[in-house]
Length: 155
Image 1 (cartoon, helix red, strand yellow):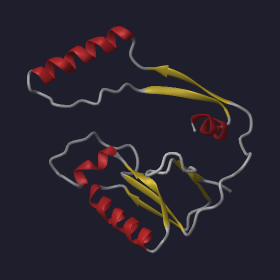
Image 2 (tube, helix red, strand yellow):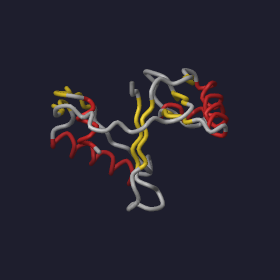
Image 3 (cartoon, helix red, strand yellow):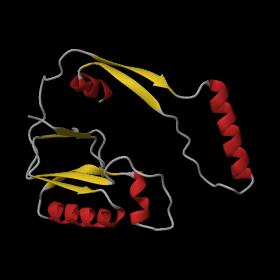
Image 4 (cartoon, one colour):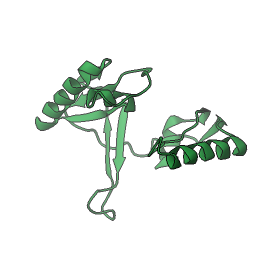
C-alpha cells in the first residue's frame, strides 16, 4: 500500500529523469506539537537521514518561533512538524491512476475585496509599517474523482 509519494525534477539537470519514489507504511513517525519539540524532531530527522533512511514530512510556518522567539505566528491547528521515516522507497506505481479528478473551489475574495486589500497592503508598506506580506485567502474545495488521478493531473 502506497501512503506517500515524492516526485521532483532533478535539481542539477531538469532534462534528467524525474526523481519518483513511493512509500508504504513508515517504521517511525516523528511529530512535534509544541514549539519546544520542533528542533528535537528535526534533529531526529537529520540522524535518520544520515543513517540512510528516507524522511518525508513537513515543518509548518507556525513553527517559526522554535527557531527565533521574536517571530510571531498564529496558533497552529495541527502538528508543527511531522515526518514519516522509511528504510527505503518503493518503486513508483505504474498505471494506477484510475478515472479522472476535478476540484470545485469555493471562497476567496471577489475582485473588489482583493483590490482593496492590496491597496491597504501597499499603503502600509509605503508608511514603513510592513516590508513584506503574503496575502492569502481561504479556499475550500470538493474533490470529484480519485486523489491519485488529481495527483497525476498536477504532475
